[in-house]
Length: 621
Image 1 (cartoon, helix red, strand yellow):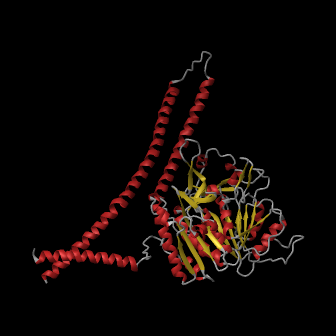
Image 2: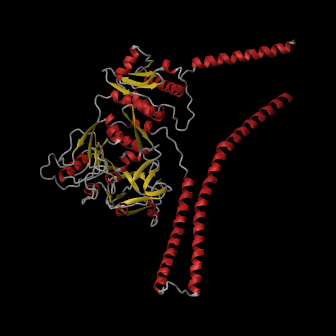
Image 3: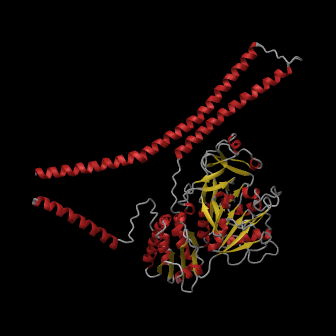
């Protein structure tokens, strides 16, 4: 054996030992380190979390209960174990930035132990797997032994994990929750469904608001508002008394914060959501326009918004093809550039109204939700009986401008009342306090209803929300911005980054316009034929024989040929739409699958060649 071979083998052994040593060293020294290379820093604690942790006035203990020993031998739980590791690392990051204000403890509740008894006492949910029970919950407590509990940490809710933990810290750090008043003309807190003859649960958005705030319900026949409200939420009020409208007016002018949801055609009212009479004589919310006018805006309760840019596809008939409903919209939360909707991808609304700014307005009106530019307003009567939503496309003519669906009203405003109504108490305020009014106006109520944003499932006796849109995040952001700290907003908005295919939507919209125009041409020609056939029937003799002139026979033959040609063109339009979409999809796949790796290979080749050339030049020198 030559020395050269000996040194080569020794060198390989040394390299192997060095690799093992570096691996062990990096595991020990860099444990818990994370390099977040994702867009928008999905796996890093946000600035809002750091502010929440920085405001902690006393130590908070976080106990993560996870059945580590029981889950080791269960292959089907490897995904849960991986998620548990990520949760542990996140909580350790909370502990690190807490500088002693957060104490994290990992607990393994093995069977028949005191830790298992503690888990059961806290109300953590044990999920049966095979013949074992698996705990995976989080408990937070403060110095006065108040507790906040997440019974089971579901992996499919990982995107809201930081929000859930930071919300827990927020609740443990305050002496009492903010007080929210709720005035609604709809059964948002649950009730009885007259159509199904079944009880209705509370809408999930209000059920979750109650987890953070003290909610006091206000009856529609009240004459005043509760004292010490941090926020007033008003939803589709009906027949408010003058005294209650005056109370709302004075509450806003005295610095009270208001979230107002009003709707020219509330879908949930039509589905048994709380209206005894589905076609009321008094338009819901119409009496509020006296207040809105004083704040510089108006919502026409007879006009409903159509939007070709954001229309959602629905199954109009059983077994039929999906149809785009121009009145049911999926809005981009980032379109208006407002902080309440920043990072929110899809906010679903139904048959909404439009907020108009009045010429005499002195208030600052800032759009929060806006439509696309291909929009128009139609009479609400078109929605009373609408078996086929595709008919909305027939007479659609774009106004070529974006409409405001939700807006924040701030600044200067005056009272809608010249004087206080009889029986009212307190000094009459004519103008807003210094700093102005704080109102969020939304011209839609369906944004709040479950069917537009969330699926609610029963999980071992608990109602679990599985959102498919960002409606809840929009409402929670607004409530927290107005009633409490805005720091939770950025946390909840993180983690969902679907990319809309704008080009595909444009292709589909253009094809629909072309399809609709040619369809109208065909319908017109069919009408002409029916008229001709009607004229021929009048000329039919008693024997049932119809005598046609050569010109009439040729006209009918020409129309039959023309009808077949137009039908073929209609099919070609749809086929071309599909071909364009497939071609664009193929290009995107080629870019993602082939082009990016090829670019990386080319870059690596360039670097390798550059290094070889550099070594060659050094060798020559």
